[in-house]
Image (cartoon, helix red, strand yellow):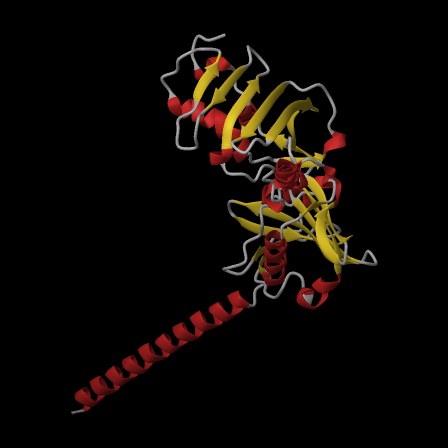
Amino acid sequence: MTTQLAERRKGLALRFGLAALAMAAVAAITIAIENRGLSADAASGPVVPQLAEAIGDAERIIIASAEASYRIERAQRGEERVWVMRDRGDFPVTAQRLGQLTQALQQLRYTRRMTSDASKHERLGVTDPRQGGRGVLVQIEDGRGALLVNLILGVEPTGLYVRRPDDDQTWAARAGDDADLPPLRDIASWLELRPLAIEPERLARVEIVPAQGRAYVLAREAPDQPWRIVQPAVATLAQTIVSTAAERLTQLSPVDVQLAPAIQGEPAARVRAVTFEGVMIDAELIVSDGRTWVKLAARGDSPELEAAAMQINSRSSDWAFALSELEAEAVAPPLAALVPGAE
């Protein structure tokens, strides 16, 4: 009897001991989780507090990176104040990109404390671009020049990192799920750079003077007819190539823009497109500072055609548009690119 009682007591003691150990383990895990949430590396809260209340006072946006630097400002256009790219001849900036930047910055939040060691800024992409670094400087000023936003962003495959230019402390951050940053290194993404907004079907004749080789003429009799090389008299088996060359001028996707007088020089190539209505559109390709720029001007020989030409010129004639190397070659290709062996 005594032995059974002792065994029972031993079993109870063992069960109580195991229960105590289990409770202690749960408590340890809970404390560890809480401590991890409160650790020095964890962070939370907005990167730019009260931006939503202050953004209405913004007058200037400065973006600087190794790839591109530009300044966006409010400007008076008649009775309306609009956003323009100041160092691109006051070319209008798209409202969609401005809204995207504002939303992303308002929703940008700290997620983790990173390094304060300046020697490690390079691998996080937050080195100052004004000193040759590869970060992206984003500054937004109000009308008095006070900085509403002053950040260097590191947009890396491993995540998004931020720091202030006057502070070595770097943080990991994230925007909202529906608030991605715009492509800050790409000037063209901020501008609606479609210099010739006409349908390819309107073109009847295209005369091309390429940088190399002889001039040639492409034409068709109606919008539903195929393009042909009418001068010189050569045959081509690749109709798609001819059509692409003839209509390329209507599909330009420039990478930059400047006021037309800022780009000077003798044209390296020329293109003249004539619509079925009779409007003539002249394009000159000019090489300046290692880039190819296109200038466009339209004209018509009657009052009706002049109105159509003015509509084209209102969008394009004040500007010079920079083309990528591939697009510059495609706008005025040599005849040999259409007809192998032709000179």
